[in-house]
Length: 89
Image (cartoon, rainbow, N blue to C red; front, side, top):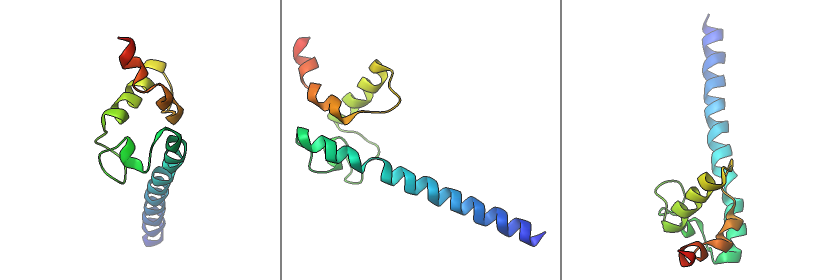
């Protein structure tokens, strides 16, 4: 019985680490793409330097674009249109 608990605990911890690792590695490529539009780091779209919530005005705009486009995820290339949509109104 102790072995089953140990295996379950180790599996759970491994899953948590995998999820966190995938989450932290998933978006740095956004900065690389966003550099074309003036980004230097995550604060281009986020308030905190390590990303996540809260979002800056640009980040909030990207999230609204994601909803408007019914996309599965944000595309940093949308930044080419940031500011232009506000000028049209």
